[in-house]
Amino acid sequence: MKNKRHLAPVAGALLLVAGAAASVSLLAGSSATAAGTPSSAFGLELSIADNAVIEPLPTVTSTDGSLKSDSLVGLPKNPVASGGIINASAQNGAATASVTDLAVGDGLLAIPQLDALTQPLGKACDDLTAALGQLTQPLDTTVLAPLLTNLQGVLDQVGSATKGTPLNLGALGALDISKLTKLELNGLCDVLRGKLKIVGAGAVEAKCTGNSGTTTIADLAALGLPVNIDTKQANQAIKIPDVAGVPPIIELVVNRQTANADGTFTVDALYLNVLDQIKLTVASATCGNVTSDRAPAPDDAPSPKPVKDHVPVTG
Image 1 (spheres, rainbow, N blue to C red):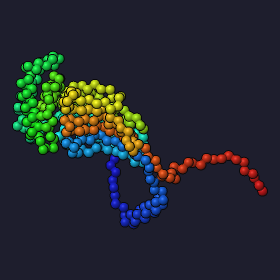
Image 2: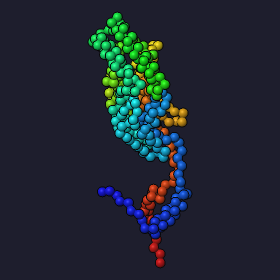
Image 3: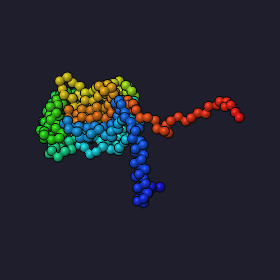
């Protein structure tokens, strides 16, 4: 049943206002303040080229220690990330954040500046992946060398075409793709052709209680390859490719834990850096503690307990 709102008669309204004023004056002496550092949480934060694209959302802060929660379905429109259900909750000494159906980099190159390069990029990738053969075999650099050079040239054009745009992909041109494994090359080409997301996960969750925290991630994958990592260990980092002297395409930090200077404790379930351009924090929970000097309300006062005693009768 829907609630219906009605305007009160003028006289009644004046009485309500007067009563409200009286209530305010009675309550003025019982105002409360909270001390300490509150718990907080947010679902996701995204920046591209150090410019905020999605501010932390949904975000909650428990300034008085009580449970605060918020959620949303889907992310605001942006060029690189999507998600399903995003939750955040916080209370004194505890916080939780979670994101489902995370996808990053799906359709990464679907921007107007790259329309003219779509066909040559697709052909370069098709030629390369066809020559890769079975992915378990060693790389035949003799056969692949000209194909790698061709793809590298197209990637250089991608970098030049996006220079000065909000999503500068110049790092693709600087990437030495000859250092990638077959699986990584295949995955990179699928990403570039829009067939695959750079990073994906079925569910990501961070929890903290006091000065400890946990991370849970289901079905984490990068460039189409499963990422096997112990989420029980704090600050687990992965680079793809992980080759000395070669800038990575992807950097992942799982279960990032930080003891903050203000005494709070933060768990970021997943931090992602793509080509040093796309930076994403997924599921962040921060635990703090606040105390309140609020005097107990009359209803909070303990009920009187009867005391049995002998009362002398006189007269």
